[in-house]
Image 1 (tube, rainbow, N blue to C red):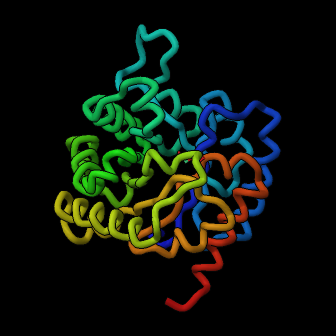
Image 2 (tube, protein in one colour):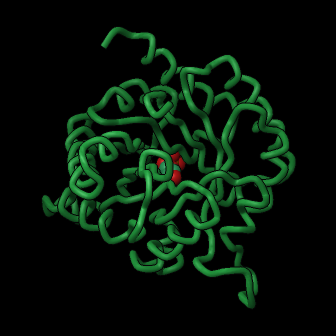
Length: 256
Ligand code: 13P
């Protein structure tokens, strides 16, 4: 069902068990909004509790270690998050690239581990404000995408989602223009077709992320090649997140 819009909430480092009621409300509402695929990526500590609440929504992790289970104090392997109920892993988020010095090579390795554990990858890419101002955003992002993807990826339609998240738009209330988002998503699409061929390259969903909220979701989701949204701050309450899911559902009802 890759033609359904995909709305994913990334809770980042937010959430204790008190937030399970939000996940439950999101899940129950999603049962009546089947035109949209909805998922949450809570912190590690809530993956299993959210998985237990979820009857409709997908559950993912925000990261994983690239290696097998073993002596890595404080780390969590791909097989561990899969065992907790995660069906996908967000990789390459700019906050991990910045806060933890994650390189494209490390992200590639993490992707291979996630696939090995039977999960999908939600791979984030995005440029800094400086790179955009220099007019190099598209070349930077397509290079970053190629360098962060795992070497082998069977069936990209099933195993890969890409999220374009300009760093300067994350948590700032600023977003690129709809034209700029469309242009970037078309450049990402062209790269996916180059890598995986016409049919598979066209089938991978490309999400937009960065200051998406219920008020701007309609416009952002209507941009060229946008297959959904990766939402941070506005995913933390059922009310604000469902506003985005409803906007996506309404857009589906509109004639093309
Ligand atoms: P905000 O929606 O808070 O800008 O965060 C976007 C993001 O980084 C999602 O992964």
